[in-house]
Amino acid sequence: MRTLRAVLIIGLGSCLWGAGSILKAQETAQDSLSTPTFFLSLDAYYRLASTDEESQGSPSLQHGQVSLGWITAGVEKQWGRLGGQVKLAYGSRARQFYEESSSGPISHVREAVVSLDVSDKVSIRAGVFPGFYGFEADDPQENDHYSNSWAYSLSTAGQAGVQLEGQLTESLSWMVGCYNDAFSRFLPNSGVICGGYLSYEGQAVGVMFSTLLGHTSEAQDLLLLNLVAEAAVSPRTQFGAELVYQPFRDPGSSWSAYGTLGLYCSQQLPRNFSLALRGELFHDRGGFYFLEETKVVAGTVTLTKAVENVKFFAELRLDESNRAVLGAGLGRALALLVGAGYLL
Image 1 (cartoon, one colour):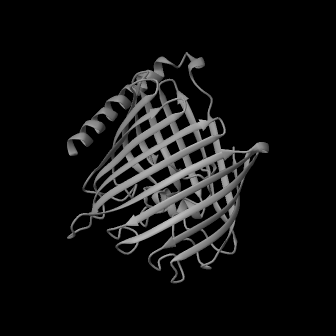
Image 2 (cartoon, rainbow, N blue to C red; image 1 turned 90 degrees about the vertical axis):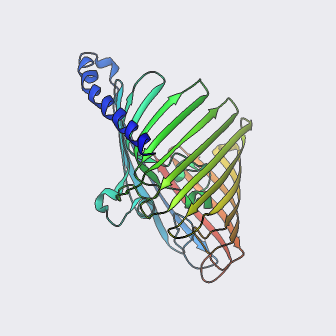
Image 3 (tube, rainbow, N blue to C red; image 1 turned 30 degrees about the horizontal axis):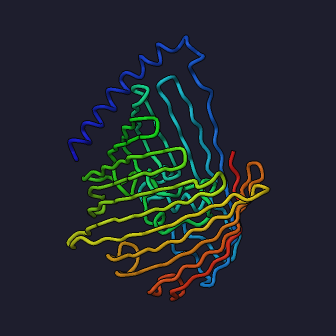
């Protein structure tokens, strides 16, 4: 893995060294330079729960008060083969995803990436990335539900490092990367984390297998295996599934693991309404997040309405566990949430 890290870093240096000459050659070719693309997203919600406490997933959602999810803004620019993108975030969602005890104001950085297209089918990227695996995303605007799954709660919010990406065919793509850490973007790590994915995107079916492995800054060894699949059975109906298996080993302990299985269904309705269902089984066999042998079954129903750049959510969620881990010493949590998000 150290060899892979050295290869990627050397490759990045070589590409960036050549970036200056690329830009210089394009100074007179203004038509090849794109205009900046700006990004703005914000959301807020109101949630009532049977436990009268914040939710146990990530991000944890407050009970009984109007709350800001986050405000996030950014800009993207392309200079021929060279590109750059920066996104900043502020709010409770940003603090839970990105805040680290030693990172200070830099924890508001959601993404900061420089990319170089080596060819039409291969590019190299360096910086702070969003998480590259899983069915769901950081921003509720990109999800069918406002709350996130347990698989997402336990995944990483992003990594800092170098990625090499490529396109094998029109529908088959790949990525390999080398990162500072799995669960921290800025803390020093004497080890190394490597990962990547292989993705197929057909006309009606998509499948992606992702992995992340290595030694974290907290001296934990881990191996993440993630499989995501989705299929459009009609222009208005989609099904999806996510399977996660993550072996891990804490210092001085033997290997253990947790796993999740999530099933998704979404149906587009008239007048820009959409109905989405999510069911999930989470088994924390090794005590990665909860007590050992904790099992959680969760079901979520969400109705959304899109009005131009605004997306409204009405969500009902039930979580049930074999242990009292869902707040207020209870093994069951029922929550009703209404929210709205704006995306520019």
